[in-house]
Length: 354
Image (cartoon, rainbow, N blue to C red; front, side):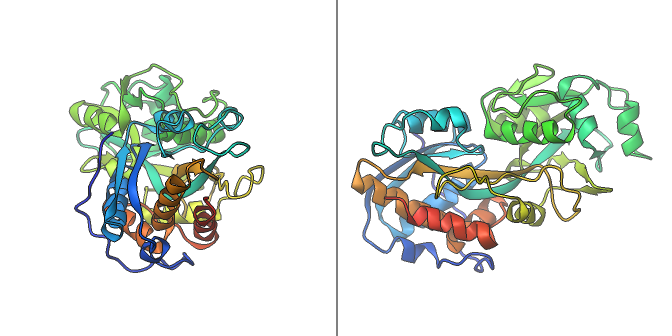
């Protein structure tokens, strides 16, 4: 396991949307022990900040988080190899129907929203700094139907841009990834006649270049020419990123747009109590929203076999869903603090862990 520590500050103004107080009150009881999490690499920077904040308040606790990917995290949690998982995709039906080794008999894992961010389309193309794309064109690029940067479909969306005749190299996640799930969900919902594959953790095509984890995608895009990939907004760094067509406008990834998208999107009403899953509105035409928004979850047991472990997970979940925890992630990872009803539901789900 990789123990992450943070040099980012936890200080910041309280979010306007949350109803709970800061994480210090949520974890005011004297907690001690070790908490192991595995999962989302998109959450890595936020987990670093959360680890620092929670351990500062609870000096007897050690939190380890291994950002090995959402799929790996869910598998580890279900098999008892992690106390919680970080996942950019909620538990799917086939996994919910299975057993969870550390959960009390008759109970299941639950999804608690903890991290909201944009999925950015990063690219490396000399002379082009303001790329605009729509869903059908993105689908054709990543499925291999468009192979040149000066393709007529790209030119039509970027009047005046100096688009070269060079090849496009799409870069996709080679590991099972919740970021891929969100990206392919967007393409399936908005360009279904082109992107016929369903949303999935595994990228459905082998066009271009595969890379493990978000850091691998960033490295491949940065080190290549004519490359384009998809990563969590916290990983963009100095790379250029495209604007995506929303209605009649082109919208860049941002914390404000992601926050509004998460808040206005409906919840999955088929889920049990305290299993809080957002059905992100991929087809929005509101230019203040961004359709490739990622809502990432902490996956935990509703009830644990081990009461001491339950107290640790509950305290940690309460901290990271609190205003203080959300602001810590925003400062460190450029994530969008949860607001309004979503924040309230996430905090209630965390408080119900037992």
